[in-house]
Each structure stands twice: as C-alpha cells, then as structure tokens.
Length: 99
Image (cartoon, rainbow, N blue to C red):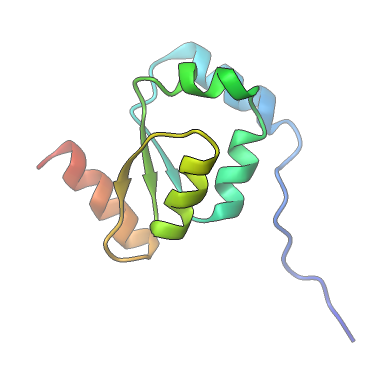
C-alpha cells in the first residue's frame, strides 16, 4: 500500500506573497534547500523579472546540485554551504555577511 506523506508543492498564494515581499523592503538573502525550492520560487516570477528583483539579493544554496539548478534558472548564486544541511546553510549565510 502506498501512503503519500510528502509532497513537493508550492503553497497556494505563494506568488502573490513573494511579489509583495520583494516590493516592500530590500531582501538581503534568499536561501534554497533543494532543487524543488528553487523551481517553485522561480516559477512564481516571469523570467526577466527574477533577475531584476534579485539584483541586490544574495542567493544561498544548500549544496552544489541546488546551486546548479538555481544557475540554470538564471539566478546568480553567491553562497553555497560547505556542509549540506540547514545548519551548514545558516552558517554559510552568516559567514558571508559577517566574515
């Protein structure tokens, strides 16, 4: 018997919420923990809109596979965690902003 207990889906209203967030104040960093998070995030914006919105935002990825996906979708990756965990990602972001 197959029990679906995990689904990678963008929550309803995410696109509107993200647009609102980026229109209000500058965003210092956006973090991605997986390829799916990058794809869902990028899917909330028109192709050319993404580069403009993230011009002054650092893109941080949990590991090289996630970073490759981000680059393929047109994002400029500034931070890649050395330890491929959420803790490693948080440490990489903190180190980037406070060397």
